[in-house]
Image: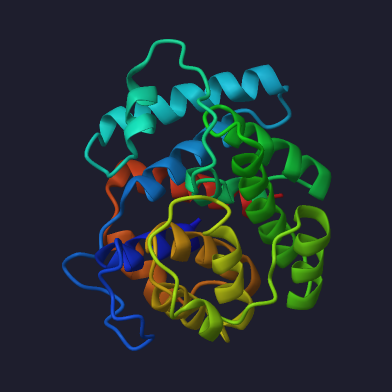
Length: 266
């Protein structure tokens, strides 16, 4: 989960195409703070930890409760307009979104389950409470699947082939081909494959994050997604974990710590 949160924090100052599309930039600055990506990552993790082994109805009920509770606790984290309305509703319904929010918050699902089949099923549930458009669901399943494969020892070629075969994303473009014309788009269709391209080209965790940020576009979800996969493949350097922890409130750290205890004891 550190990967997703770090990607969010590091990318936040460059959101809305505010970066220079280069890899050489300060990793942390005064503007490197968590946004809605991290808040919802924590919310989903909390819900999934509380519902291990439960059925779809229970998991979705707890997901909605956790997402609304955390979202209301941090109302100014930068939510999209429709999601902001969803947070305030009693008995909220999904609203057909294919935005990248389903993919940026799903990382916990990639770590908590013993099979790829269960990982995909639960990832789908995390999307469907809001992002029930097929592309929104596909984005969440793709990211969770890539994390599962990375943490269980798959090579990058196997991860790429699985994503292409099962989800149909075009991963043939290099980051150098993507970068010149890529701009701020908030859909899964135009964020998930770019994040995967950054992961596939990056040489270590930090390089994945820098590559993702250098693409521009929606520059906290994109590195959030790329870094969530990179964490499972490379791990996260201790100095970056420490920096991440200094920028999170205690209540979010408590969820992160509980999450890693569960993962380590599996």
